[in-house]
Image (tube, rainbow over all chains, first blue to last red; front, side, top):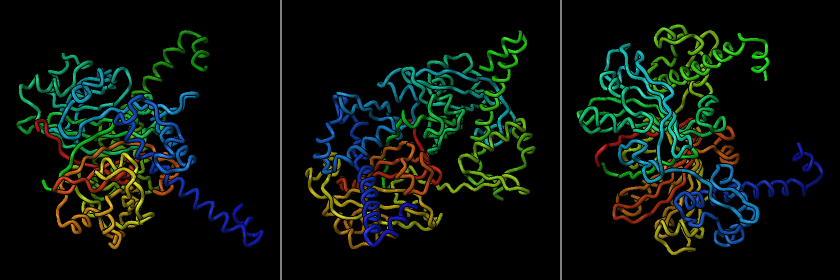
Length: 261
Length: 261
């Protein structure tokens, strides 16, 4: 190892290597710190012209070295949030959209002001419910449920891959509906004549497997925000179990938590 | 391309290749569908002995082919949730812990029943607040805030990397506290004599950069659940801004959403 060789050459080598390592670690830590602050700025429209200040201005503003600024911008570029344009500088290219965590809403509903949601229905039809699905939807195990698989797009860009299970009495009425252009949530409320009540959700970050990545047109291994959601009607009946993979580079989820319930 | 060559050989080739492709896509879709159902089972203790049923039993139970079952188990293995032990079968090795999304809680508090949280304090000390941080914490830009960087572990396993900013009047009192073993939330309530009020949170899924991955002892590019959280005291004052990277393979976030607010 090079380190050993340097150490072997005499007393001077080791501290120099150690100091170099500490500097590099310190710079990486500072770059992440700066990147986190800039990330929020750029995701919330903090750079209205869509261009970040010049590296030297960022270095002054954030009391960081030029090298740290460059490394922070590299981190944001690797995430697909900024790009470097020759002669222009660093520009915001993030296409991340905010999904509310405070209220139960369908995708088209929550992203209304950001554009149009369209759904490519990959599969739709009755299928026997696996036991854990049947249990959660309160239907007999093995009985048919409606299974829907949709690739959802915002303004044409792939956003999420949704696997949906619905009890057949509710689900079969959906078969004649415009699933391409309408949230299942809205259809459920129209068809049942009652509003939705609540949903239990679980969120995870996972690396996309090769096939899911291909469907979402994302690189293999891309970070995916995985949402599992069981939605109930206002009368408490569970009617919609979904497994949703959101492209991590296209969605943020925001909400408010309280200390006392 | 092989496809063209096969097509050139005569009329039989093309449909066979197309049929093969359709079958493969179909099986990948079915494998994901099965993996999603099994994932939930194994994360919620649905396989009490920690072992999954034999492949043939899963194939029967889920009306899937053996190949589909194998592919679904491959997906779960790639996520680090199960492992295959020769002579034993497929066993659950997931170490994912549930973090509540319903109530504002510190890590040690929310994971109390799962073990002991310890914090390796990587950095702690006053630092000039970057303008966006100063703005959110309601302190003058450029004034000092307390910066803390912690690698947090559950039962010794790296769980998250937390970057924390606190106003100096509150923060400096924390310097004498046991940051290694205590949530900042609990210390804030002890020191200010008032409970926390609420927090604005944003969740994202990102691929870990090389340095963050190394700190978290995760593979480069590993999916990370990134949480940004601004916490306020009960009187409304913002006191704690955090940027948290959770290892995606170690945490799930669960909560309840309502349709009407």
